[in-house]
Image 1 (cartoon, rainbow, N blue to C red):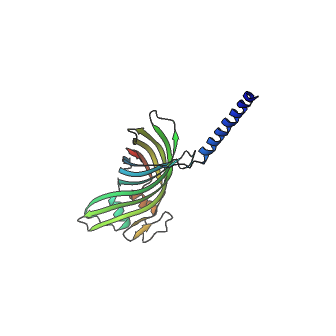
Image 2 (tube, helix red, strand yellow):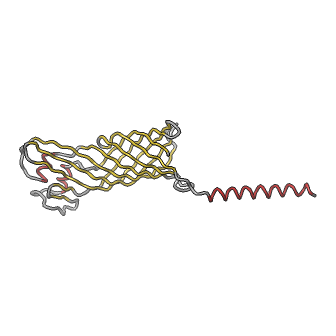
Image 3 (cartoon, rainbow, N blue to C red):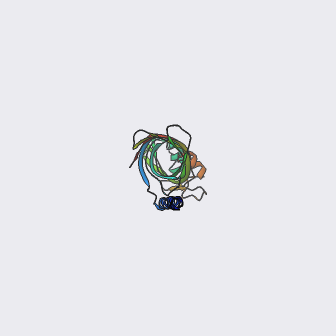
Length: 229
């Protein structure tokens, strides 16, 4: 009788232990993992990006969140057209121009099986861009900026290739799209709805948008490294 009682007792103890372990695992809080990265490459111009990545936000939650700050040197637009649309019709001086964007990007990454020997992610999210185009006419007594702030969306593919226990080489490719924003320069502003401020002559927002290189569609190809803390 004692031997017959041992087997049910062992089964009961085993099931109890398994249920206790399972319940314990479910009650263990997720431990977020943090990493930081630096990338360089093409972002409709030569760009550099610094980012922070957080994973394991919740148990079983597959998405990772990435916040990045991007700086890019870009083509600002057509200097003679910009001068005519925002300043005056003068044609003296030699034009010099430069442009830049500061962008804040929030992405969510979803793991996919695509590239061997790597961790690969589809990413997508929201962007905010601050564009500045500077136009200077040497000998023409004109030096002015045209600025815009824009919201946008973007996405792409990112691969993480292990270099060491903490370092990954990161390759990313994608595209961003930015929506039309107000173009302001000197004392003039052109709005997408053509409710403009001090417009020159009969120029409209479409004229200003064609002359100025504010972001629209931006292909991205970047390479860098990621460090896991």
